[in-house]
Image (cartoon, rainbow, N blue to C red; front, side, top):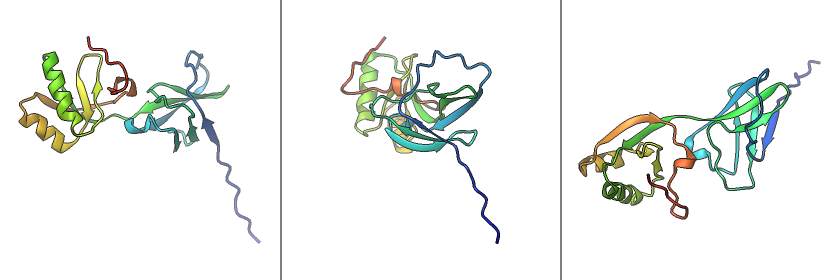
Length: 161
């Protein structure tokens, strides 16, 4: 009688990102890739590029960031990578234009991201793109990584340069 092979699957449970100050030399570096909208999830199960199953079970509401160190052992380090996506990118010329753009986008209940270069980015949506174009705004479509730290939150402090 033939027996089925036993398949051992390695899995790692992550409850929070590590400090990231650790020396990673001599370790296999593996990446857990997620979509931008998954960064704030409290629970998810995904496989790394190297095939390791990772279960995220965060108790806090803080979003994961690109480059976060999720796991570290003598042999392996797992870092978070946020996949780039098509984005609608606007480069407003005045504070009034920022307000108008954010109002138009906000009416669509789409998360808004402001980059370090004061660009306004949102995940691509054809109808929103057309609306902003018809409103006379200079709109471009670019592939970008949407970082959770750059998301405008109505309940947080907004810093404009």
